Amino acid sequence: MKRTCLLALFLFIMGAVSSGDAARAAAAEPAAKDPKAKAQVKTVFPDPPDKPRIRFLRSIKTLRDLKGGKAGAGTKFLEFLAGGESGSVIVVRPFSVWVQGDSVYVTDADGQKAVRIDLTAGKVKNFSGSGDAALASPVGITVDPSGNVYVSDTGLHAVKAFSPDGDFLWKSDVLGGDAGKLKRPSAVAWTPAGELLVLDTGNNRVVFLSSEGKFLREACRNKKDESALPYPGNAWVEPDGGFIVSDAINGRVHIFGPDGKFVSGFGEMGDSPGYMARPRGVASDSEGNIYVVDAIFNRVQIFNRKGQLLLHFCEPGSGPAQLFMPAGIFIDASDKVYLVDSKNQRIQIFQYIKYPLESGSEAQAKP
Image (cartoon, rainbow, N blue to C red; front, side, top):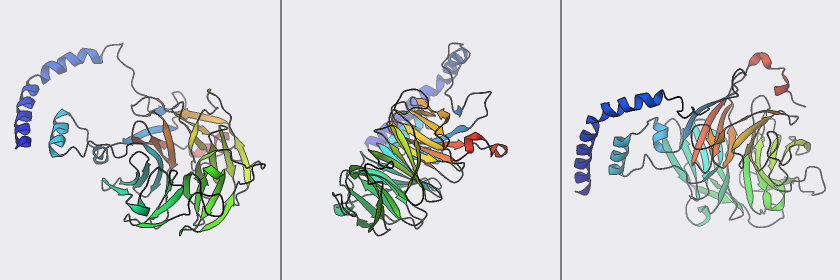
């Protein structure tokens, strides 16, 4: 009864509002020509006359974003009458992202869940539960070729596995420094060899687990070695099985080969372009360029394999291609860049633009 009354009130208000549309449109016309009007949000990087390298595509925050609609006052009111689901945020505080096919997987630390966002069907599925399946502080997420989902829970000191349907499969041993026991695990990533890479942040090492959660081996454990990780925060596995780790304490990026041996590294703390303040997500594109997300300066920097800065994109804010405390990043085979915009509660998607005739350029050279 209440919703019926509200609907009647809404129709009355909309009738009154529509009569003033022409007047508002006329009033808005001069403002559009005002030279003092706010500048358009930047969505292509870098600025002309340089060739565009990064282009903003879309953002995903609510179910409405999945359906491609833009709601006005009328639509929002009708959604309220229906329960308001389409306008609700999908994740409260997203952190990590993984993409497989048309599905985007995201951890939600505050929501204590992981989600799968189906871009084709426009549907969302949650991964969590009670007992062993419960998530307290989900951080990292990855998916194997069969669709099984692996989530690191830094609060519970464990990695948990779920089937594609969301059924709980297993959890790793918890709280320890030996064999497969973990302490504050952060990033997870599936490797080409069919193993699960885990950043065991509390133990300053990298651990490899089987798809059943069994301990296989560790790397980067010797603190006196050049491959030592003072505070491994995020990781990315490359097509050849090598991996890249961001180090938030030293403001550095470490590059390792498929055998787990240290190859090279770059970066230092600072607030100028090319320096890092709080590196979080890290990834590489099809040309080997390395992307590093900086949570303090709300930007993404792109380096070549020698650590030379090529470009940085995004700026602080809440509009398209603007960030507020960004976190994880994922780059798919077509060089689409999926970026976690944590405080803005959304995933932003960009396209890295390649120029085939530049295949021998310094920007694409590997050591």
